[in-house]
Image 1: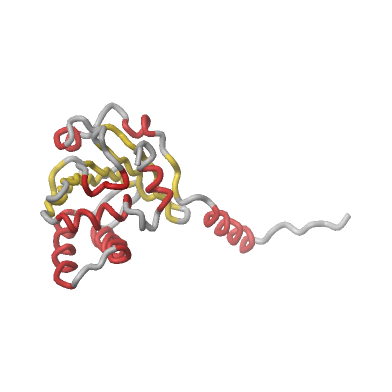
Image 2: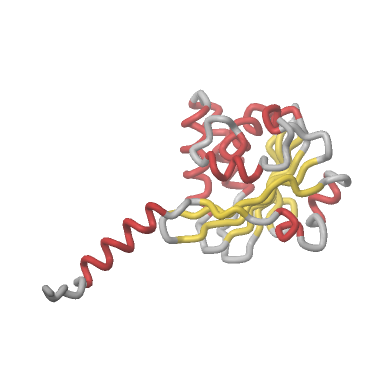
Length: 195
């Protein structure tokens, strides 16, 4: 029998990198577990009949980034998300700067929507106001108001309002739109939707 050499550190690191790419970027969360004792206060106030429609964990390579929970009224239809009131709660699992949140949001919004320069400037300023640097455990909740815009809450406190339905459609489209770059997360969030 021929002896087999032990893998080198470099080989082990390469295997680990390949395994991380093969690992799904999303871990499905049990909706009942995500719901916990009830809707966060900002969700309960905006959507008194809200229930968890779906939940998932966003991962990037080896890092867990955030847990997402979609709170909706009973009549919510995923394919027509922009026509419904709902709340998307992101509970962060690692520190991320507000600048990175704004930059990545704009990048995803540009990918699926046509945004002129004036709108992009206005939307950037609105997100800079609404977003804060996050630490593990912090929550950003976006409450969608159909035809009106979005209210952003940071750890339950109102932080910004964007009265622009086009912004709301593009922003929530990052997660809920058919053209999302994270279709598995979209599927997990919309798991309880009939359409």
